[in-house]
Length: 121
Length: 225
Image 1: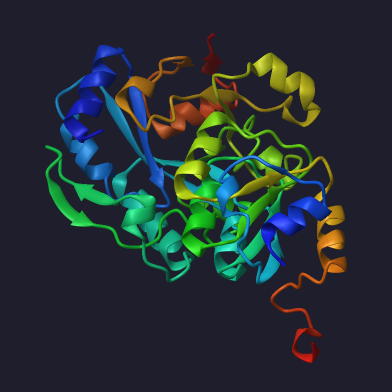
Image 2 (image 1 turned 180 degrees about the horizontal axis):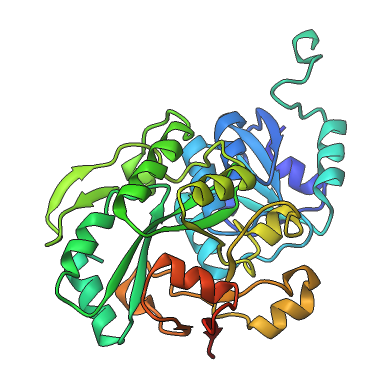
């Protein structure tokens, strides 16, 4: 499933790098602590967080994530939006909570890295 | 932001005391202390530590030796990752003139595995001051990340940014009533160096600042707008 398809099914608003939405998503990771994301998220993952500050772009770029879903209606400042466009990082926003978004992603079949049943698919 | 420019700017602003608080490191402290020799300026040795909860705490010490001792502990608790210069920028160690000495290749922007409690404790054991940094910020702050000021942790003061006031913070968070506040430039550029924290103390030392934070012996601290 691509990020664009996810955005459509979950009614997310694409804020940046709209040309990069056809990335195939490899899985998902949810955390608001950037140090955890840097340790656990994998290339091509979609990252779900309520953090909206500039550093999320650096982390997503470093790990080559498919994109970031910023939840809870958090507002992104112009510097973050600009950096995300420069780095080609899609940021999608939603008023929904992280929990709700992750639940919907799971229903779409997006798995976390250590999902116990992943090997059985 | 090399040492000679930092101290020159501090003197221009008529600052009596500044603290050097690099992220998870104190390797540039001695250079600034040396650059300030002979000037009417006290340079405190410190660092801004990022705890495991991603909370920023300012750690201030009387001497560079105490800061270096604390740095050993911090380095031991950083993940064994290398900095990526092309992503996060280079981390230089310089001398008092600002000339290059070495590159710090640890990933300093990572979180340590130390908790807020452990950092406060470790700083206290080294007779330093532990201040919760920019508590009004929505990220990397004690209030944002923990939701409240932890009960049993000894913090010496709270720091706010210029985007709020002490009144505003104490109104919003009753748990802050007992704390003294400071504000600082949190300067990553010379133009950000600030002069809005006024300390009424006998001399610019950690013990005097500690008295000011506790409002003892006539010592006080005030944030001006």
